[in-house]
Image 1 (cartoon, rainbow, N blue to C red):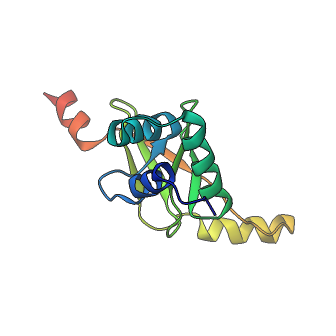
Image 2 (image 1 turned 45 degrees about the horizontal axis):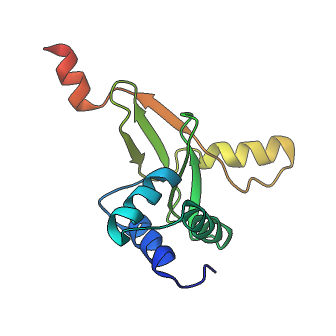
Length: 130
């Protein structure tokens, strides 16, 4: 568990906010510095690493070369807009049946998976049609 500190408390608060779904380390560091006035990048990194190790957050790969994090809540997939880059969660797990099929065909016990859909969000689609 991350040691209590203003930085780790701030990181945990940011990750818990409902205003935002995913955070990169850089975005968390910038937000912590904005709130606290100063924070070492390494301290933010250590807090995130500790939260991930403790299972409080999940690492999400969006294929953009950055690692993103979100609270470890009910599993769900993500969709990213090809135009603006906005990422939205897809409620529920669309791969539950596929996980069972993978286990049946390989003998592996599936412990996790990630699926990223891509498409065009409603706002970008409307702008394209104008």
